[in-house]
Length: 201
Image (cartoon, rainbow, N blue to C red; front, side, top):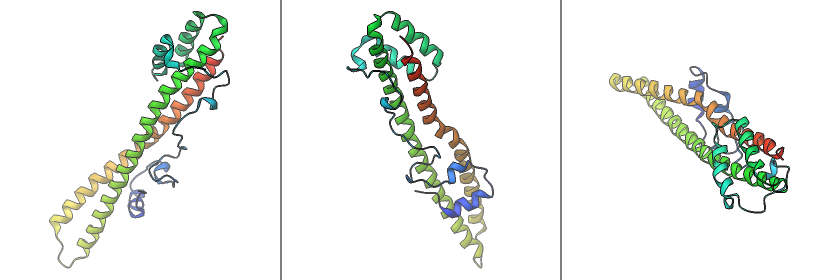
């Protein structure tokens, strides 16, 4: 589903699109320059003890983890609320509770990342289909303009279609940078929260 060379060559003259759109990738459905990581593992970022039970089994954590996983909640707020929760527990229970809390937050982040990554795949397939449509229209345009008797009505219609499709392709390509950064930003958030929670005692 890679973008067709003829379309890329044509758009290169008119579109200042991000380099990621035109890079080559092992996964044809993954258009981002960032490496695709489908699931973040707790072992990658958590240095403390691993939880011995499911985070959903703890009533407070079952409510707190989804709330703190929200992107609108700052890391400072995460630290403050997690520290307040830790203070309600005996000191010996806090490491396990923080591990459970992080497991819950990471589970929520992984769920959101999975939806975003799936959406990026659909985005790439849509762009590939649009690329094919542009190629087809350009090929027809070449035939029409080489004909001894040109069909000007059809040529005008094709020009309008091409202008519209190229504009859509360009706008989507320009927004791809932000779209591709979202899974990375969520990964960075998970690492930051892991550091904060592991320091609470």
